[in-house]
Image (cartoon, rainbow, N blue to C red; front, side, top):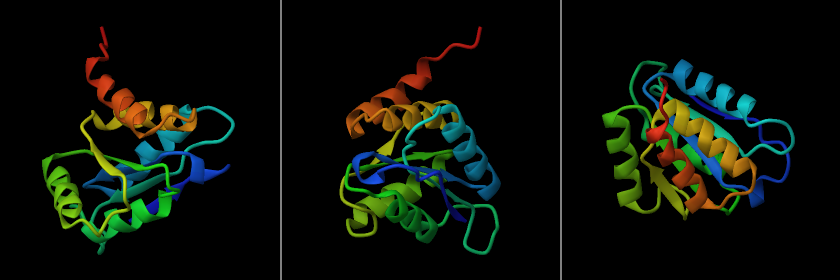
Amino acid sequence: MSDTTNTSGTAGSLVGIVLVSHSAAVASSVAELATGLAGGGTTAPVAAAGGTTDGGLGTSSELIAAAAASVDGGAGVAVLMDLGSAVLTVKALLAEGDELPDNTRLVDAPFVEGAVAAVVTASAGGDLAAVEAAAAEAYSYRKE
């Protein structure tokens, strides 16, 4: 299921975010959380690409490609994944070279915390490198 969440404002100037999960419900819920925590004003475009095309658990290259196209405004697309095979699916799409928008980047980050950091940074106008760095930095967040 590809679900674009909150594309208010001028999306063309903001990095788009794609959240890839093995579950459509998880991808949509993390997208909702991240956009909700991004605050008011213009929010970066976020799309959930969860599950398979028939609604099952897994990942779908078709849903990922559609989600990336839906958030691409020209500033780049950051793709965050939940588990290993989702990473492999995104890597395969990037290797094909024509399935994802130009300037699409696989972002190595924890799924929930990284998604929040990516959406907040993109919504503040951060470029693709800043979005990737903010999401990756979430690995160091401590919960003690």
